[in-house]
Image (tube, rainbow, N blue to C red; front, side):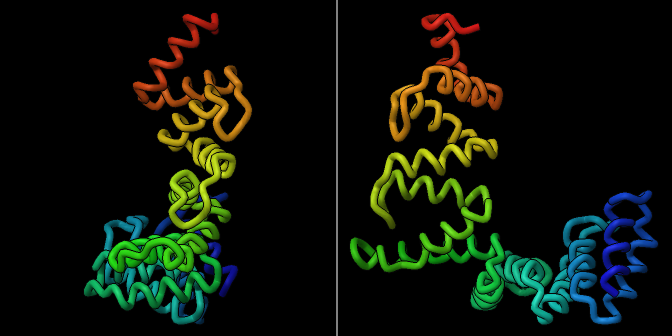
Length: 239
């Protein structure tokens, strides 16, 4: 059934074969009926992401649930998201947390990020400060998600090293994480990295690098990027 599920996925998503959603769905259904968790997950995607003719969160939930109960970590995360957002099922934060934690135990990146954000919110509600805040698992979850490449988590980790909320302030570590976010196309991070290179904050001063990051930010519509790039061109004779 595994090969059948993959073939169905390929037909639906036009991966190496001509797109044929009807045939792809038939393959997925046959594989799912034989107990293949990936097939159930792909069927969930079919209904939740609009791969099929129309989005159907209720059916997507049922498909994801089959896969999630079989231990499929991505399906567990999708189930959690549907519970959290109340799509295809009655909104249930407790159920969402349960499934996020199950997926996070398997190091599923999005689940790690969502649990980290949930912990942050709870810390704020509980008004934790100082040593109590340092004991919170929020940053650990966010860091694990960031290390796995979750863009939002990368920005969060950079922010925490900048503000020193959960960890000790570190300009160097903040720069490292902001640069990763900048490379992912995050506009705020690109501006931050450009300023760091310009001022030598958290890294060695480098006008060439600063100019390049300001230009990249400018291409995304950054007013700061456009202004600073022009200044560099005017005063440093960049072309």
